[in-house]
Amino acid sequence: MNLVLAEDYAYLDALPDAVEIEIVTPLSAVGQALNEGTPHELVRAVRLFLSCALPMEGEMPTDLAAAVTELRFSLTQPSTTRL
Image 1 (cartoon, one colour):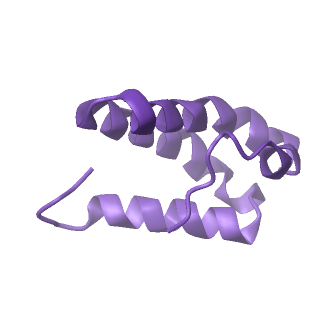
Image 2 (cartoon, rainbow, N blue to C red; image 1 turned 90 degrees about the vertical axis):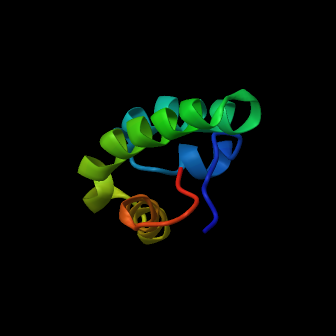
């Protein structure tokens, strides 16, 4: 899965305003945790992102909504290595 990170400003700026407002800050937290955080901080940031993104799925572009769905699904599957 290709996760759109906060550095992709053109993509984020093209999102509907309501979606952009809800996901930019949590997405930045995911990027920061991915680059500098602990696994626990990454899990927390991903869960925050999902809690903000899931209510907006219907307003998202198809590719972003699919990525959010895939991320949510991957967190609910039993695995030996989970976020």
